[in-house]
Image (cartoon, rainbow, N blue to C red; front, side, top):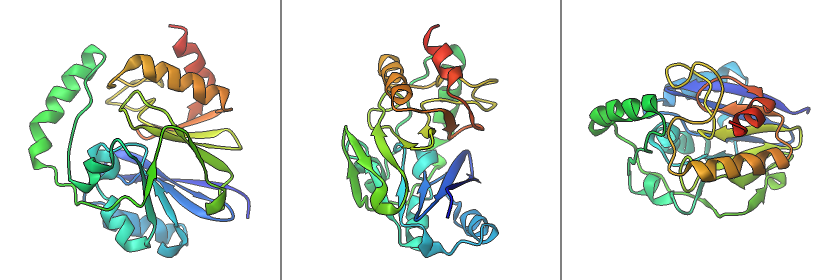
Amino acid sequence: MSLTIHPIKLGFEHCYIIRDAGCIMIDGGSPGQAEGFRQALSGLSLKPGDIKLVVLTHGHWDHVGSAQAIQAITGARLALHRQEKDWLEQCRKPLPPGVTTWGRIFVTAMALFMPLVRIPAAKVDVILGDGTLSLAGYGIPGKIMSTPGHSRGSVSVVLETGDAFVGDLAMSEFPLRLSPGLPIFAEDMRQVRQSWQALLEAGAKTIYPAHGTPFPADIMRQALLM
């Protein structure tokens, strides 16, 4: 089978199912998206058990909210960085600081409804560190890379094709951004830039953000010059 990438919208974010010799998923969507996930699988003619691994790019609520449900449906292993595994296992809901004026306004607004958000706890099966992890064992030609900055435990998936799934290390969708570029929320923008340099050096060519549609990596090369 040739490699295929299937974006699926689960609440506030885009998740991705990657199929080749094996099948993995990137991110777990907002809370309450179990039925939307089932429908997406049906539309792709995928069996739940086909998905063997769910890589959570970081532990924020809109990326792990339905992880427990997806794990229960598929039996897949959940992978999350060691610095953020407690966020999912203990149902924690930290918010990143805004790094632009709009980002600060947006985070303030989000904080108002966070008491209403419920994240079911789930056990992290694959605890990621600060290096890289090959996905060859899951039948996918690529690797997981540590790419901190948006959050301290953020990771990205980079395929041998140059397709890079970066979570919130970039954004390209209203109401967060009007055009592709750097995140409007981040714990450390210096680290964001360092992570982008590492991704570009690793061969990233097409960027798949969690919030927005894919765009060329050259856009990020230009953003790093500003």
